[in-house]
Length: 238
Image (tube, rainbow, N blue to C red; front, top):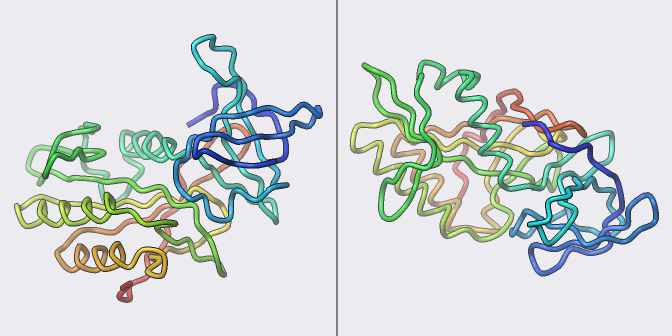
């Protein structure tokens, strides 16, 4: 996934109201940018952090800038747009870059399933069981090279895990794919101290046969692309 417009750097002044951030551009101008992330953004919203925004001249948009990236120590990056993972994963699935799912030729986004839910992707192929794939954005890192999920309570996420388990019991494949949108992580685990219910749902879903996959991303000022497979902690998470 490539950004449509070259990004501009600045420094974060404050992130507030979930969808707004005040940023001082390198030019010295202070602007309000759209923050495409309603989550807690733990560790990625500290004042003074160097950030990158995408300008636009669309008269239909209220704000002329959209916050896209954070620059991290050691030359690393984090993407903060929660819509990016589905775009990146769709590109990867279509190009058959996700090895465990590479045999599927048809990728359908946003298909109804379960109890008033939509699965991110339904994969189909003759002579193969349908594969229901949910995608989760990961950008929390607190220690070593561990990526952690979630960064706040997500009842919706726990519901998705239970519904994927139901799909397995109905004879289908079910996959939870975690996409780590930062470049300083090499493995994934859950964060039971932040959401014990989700961690318990993760363990329950994995025991029911839901496949847990994790992939990294390649991030720079030009865009975010699908990266290498990362290991998921095999131990119980709750």
